[in-house]
Image (spheres, rainbow, N blue to C red):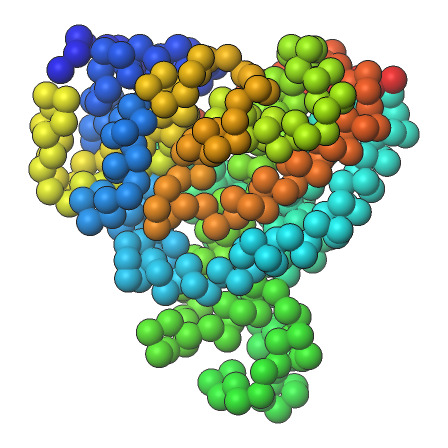
Length: 407
């Protein structure tokens, strides 16, 4: 066991820049215990420990949620075999082939947003591109009308902002508001089926793409799990999980990517001169600035690790961002570099690992690559103008503002 370290995951100092603290923990206290919460919170920081934690789902459970407080949400935040059933319901929509088929459509969205930027000479890259693009894309996949995206983005952000609270009531209002909206979307499809004379419990004829839209909401409405239809409660939990998880993380990837490239002008110049670096830049951004700093698991038995006894049913954070800068895995880990091999870069854990690997990983990568390509080609003089601001949720790492000029 290393020497004692003072570390509060919720402190302003940590929120401002957690990486020096992660380095200190990796070196001297690879499993840290924080007592100033409603229950102890543990932080795991070494790559091998985090990777083992993410792949051993029998020892490290998601049953009690992946946030600091205990919360049995189920669906995508559950353990196999239940997790496998629900994940299979959305697999088609996020499969690599389906994501690749969306490239032209996403390219059009990117161009439209950049066209709007071009009307001015400066602005906020977060508001102009990084925020609206992922929201528009996930809304299309799920089947949310684009006119409503600002509202569900606000609900999503409010739920994430409450993630550090030990009181579940703090996220109740935005969650219930979002659920009410999603239930309306389900009811619209139910009504369409009823008006067509179809029974939702007898779908011998496939109505998706004919009577109701071909989207995730329709798929979840008609889906069966373990030879039964889903309940509305399950449908709403799944949709909420997808909406909350499917926009802010990609927004943070985009802001982090441009923030680092513009903070070191030489990097942006390299990108402009060599389009083959777009993919490398996206992966290095994911490694260097994990949009999700980490998520929690709960151990199903007592664990002894690094001289610390972790009692059964403790909350332990698998800290992706700390693991991604482990010098035992990545050379010169605290430097953002564009000369790394893709095979090595993709060892990063920013999308998780194993059964809970992020289903939207390929979609997020595609959006970031297309946005980087368009901006680099259209705005060769892009530059930061003032200091950026960090987003609020302690589990996430990104910029809530990124003021730039491009004239």
